Amino acid sequence: MSRNSNKTAEILRLIQTKKVATLGDLSSNKHLLSVFASSAKATPRRRIIDTAALLARQGYVSVGLLDNEKVFKITEKGKARLKAHQVTEDGLTIPERWDGRWYLITFDIPESKKVARNQLILTLKKHGFINYTKGLWLIPYNPAKLVASLRKQLGLKSEIRLIVAQAIDGEPKYRKHWEI
Image (cartoon, rainbow, N blue to C red):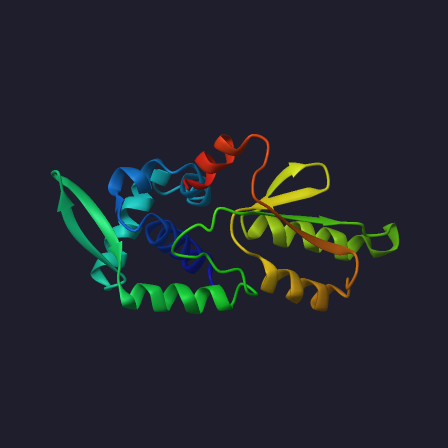
């Protein structure tokens, strides 16, 4: 998938997670701003707004007004596109509603498998994991399929562990980060 496809998928993900997202939600989201920051042509906010408008023209999101503010809602066509994109991401799917659980990945990979360890860390970052503490990576979405895929792809059957938690220290900070 192209970089632009990843960017549009990030917008679709946010809209799907929030059910209905305002233009302000999209253009002020820290994660989206960082995803769109690589362009020298336009500001990240402008590119987010333009991409949301393009998604609406293509039928991936519907546009309406709520209290005189433009709002976006993902369409069935948008859900299908997002689902197709998620399949290419080795099984990390973003549910419509957060299940209230936190998922942590930890690993113990020997120095002899340093390349696999680095690839694992890059993949976790790419999928939106946050380094919760040294050796623990956090995400609020169930990564079981992704973990199974990584174990197989990287040959790390017993080195990668998945932990499911009902609560974590600093939870408000992380809920704010993922806007859940």
